[in-house]
Image 1: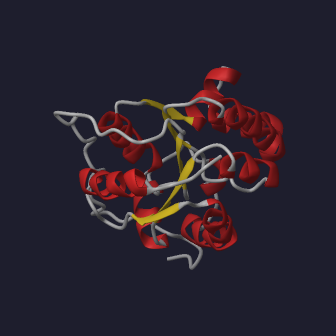
Image 2 (image 1 turned 60 degrees about the vertical axis):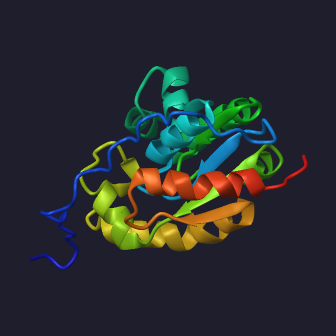
Image 3 (image 1 turned 30 degrees about the horizontal axis):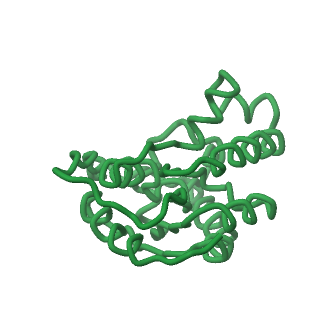
Length: 203
């Protein structure tokens, strides 16, 4: 086998099911947006939906908001405008989203790269960094064809490189850091809720 190849695990577990709505929503003492950051495959969208249900809030996915604005999928934006063009559009979409109150927002994995984005995140809401190791990230993303940055001969090595680059930036903006690991989504949601209730941040 070519040393550069990184075959996707044949027995990768199926994605965690989306948690069902709880009987009662959990209230927070603030209406600041809850913003999830982390690597691709960290579970931001799935966990974000679960949190939004538990909190009775609207859920937004930054990538989906960006696609709706542009009218095309993210790989197409990369193909036409490159990563530089994509990041510029991402920053504009992020600025619009974080201005909204009472939402849960899942950001793209690279949203923290621009200094302006990091400032917008830190001054807009409660930032939760969903952290996972490279093996877990690769297991979750290896079959996803909608991730242009992983269209490389060795996507696992690419993930490792991106994580090394971005880890300090995620930590810089984070108010809370939650290890997702292999925990079921409902368990992660239940772990985050009391942390959000106890989090104090004045903006």
